Image (cartoon, rainbow, N blue to C red; front, side):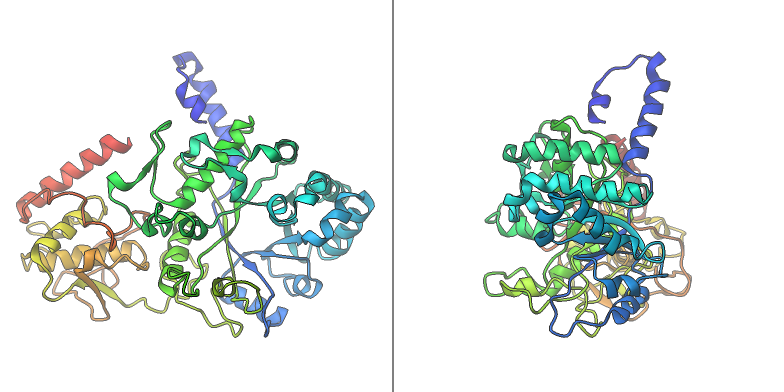
Length: 510
């Protein structure tokens, strides 16, 4: 669609362009984005399928991906409505890719035996085949076609899509995204694969791991950029060819895949991220595999996806994503981090509490609803002022209650007003990890800071309503506003700043 925007149509073509845009958009995203989870089973104390399903229900998880087609698990998922992606393991791929009959038997045993009671919606054929099992690459597309043919014979092809998950490493020269292309070694596979996805109405499955991109960048990629935390404007990644700004690694990788497909003349194939996450524990060589970073990444990722933010190339287009993964898998070989990607332990206890209040019900295990973000005692007034500027400007907080004559104007000082703005931002961002920091001048408290007629967000009575946003508070590696304070604190200049901010943001984004 970027190509369409570059073309200069006369007025007579406008209705056609509008209709074409609707068709393409509908093809790419016919429903809102969703969050799912991957369910690995390399646990020494793997919960029973009934226990797994109970956890899924309790966490309102409505989409799951299995790494096989385990009969007991599929039976337990029956009559739950949970949408299931089953998988053909890599070790079965060669047999299925070489025999239509073998593929048909696999579908009969692992799909037809369970539908419609179990809501199977996709089959993932293999896993990262091109990079982990290259000798099977020649039969990969055949395997997809054979599985699809069996579904067609059962009249299930419209309900159950067939695809194969790829590592993002098959995309070369991924930044800037507009220059990205698939490893040309695999073009003899990718071209027929993309033709298959297009002709069957399926989607590209991609595994996106900003953690590994960050770890392998030797310091080039900032941690905040990988965690969806904000950077200063001059630190944001800009694609020089499109002038698109990238504020996180996830979007850059997804757009690189879109551009790589368009390089091969495929522009209307949707994309689903089948794996993404962050480890909560690592060894000495993995200092950023921490609970705090895992919480920050997954909380911000879930909010980013559920907001239907899309990417710079396709804003507003759903990029549904499956979190890797439900449980910590203690039996997985490799480094410490390999065993610690899970959201829960084997007993169903959360490894950390995701901060997702206000982002829907999925994975809503946040027990810290009654917390507030306030100015820290003894905080530097100039830093408070700068943070207040940011919150009421780029942070998009509604600071109108702080105007003279409004309910939160008194007391008229920077500490009180910064406290209101901090808390408003904190709750606007659903109390996500890292959104009550403001360069160290803010802190979380359980004491309601409301006073008199001024009711703070999160208290029993509220002055107004806030919605989720994807702009994140200044982090430890950025300044509060990215520039000097644009106004000296006073109620009379607050409105001027708000108007100025609206004009600036309008000029940039409209």
